[in-house]
Image 1 (cartoon, rainbow, N blue to C red):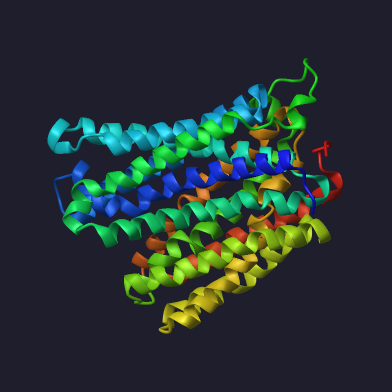
Image 2 (tube, rainbow, N blue to C red):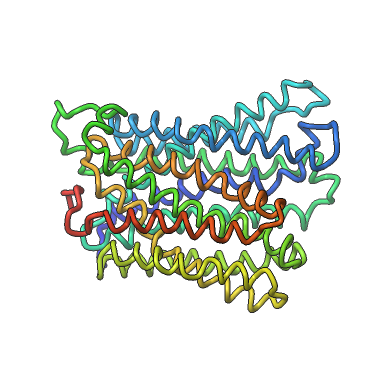
Length: 424
């Protein structure tokens, strides 16, 4: 599994930026309970949280826009430039949130600035996925692309865990009043500083051979060109992204709330269970990446598809009545390990479907559409089913979305053999 120092530095640099991106993204969700009243002082806590939740959703809406804009940018100006721009935008958004005065000081301008900051962060995250997926896939060696590209999700989950850790640290060191008044700003300031450091690092990364070896008169990257040349790949990436994203959000961000609202675990217990499960999930990514390098991409994708359809309803049904946190942890690992078979190589499979001149856009845009439509709405759909008194409907909903993705998996070529990443 040898890899030269230059490539290793590049992969670490790309991965570190991905961690910062997702730390900043999840910090908003983790700390909204504390800063909601700063921007929406009127009404009860539920109304305030709805306000911050609506702004969170704005970030998802901006993802496809960011994917299109920054995908074209990375295809035109280079993967390194795209990576630097995405983390630079995240730095700006986090700094705006850290510094914006509250409603009491500047009135309605406070939530407006918060919306603008989240729009910028949404653009950033939308562009980050395509840029980092393309960069890591192109920078890795041919025989170990599954292993090295799996670090995209290692750092994505790592960012989520880092946001949780910072939240727990602030809760342990500050009073609730201090945390609600000003302490929450420290998390966003920390994210901005991290992002600035990674921006400097990314500016010094090597460019990929796939981008540098293109002819000067290569076709331009753009939506029309992408759809005309690769409509089948566009639709397949969108469908598999919908299935993967819906499952990811169902079994990570929503499941913690499920353990509290349905299984009736204490908030602290649910947090501990999910933290432990996410750590195992994070560490599993490279292992499944190695398996994909050995046995191919399609067997891993189909393992997730078939396994996910089989276990989703039983897993949610069992967790709904489970009272032992250790058993709950063990049950949660079943779908997360199956999901690892997809998340470890999802970025790589998409990158291998497109030629270099349009690869970043081809990875980013259909992913962002599928993610926004089915990943960003997963929690809302789950709560809708619960409020309607048919919570089990959500279990079948997730199963159906995985089923659609599985059909798409069957239609994919074995990209280990047909990869359009020709450089090694």
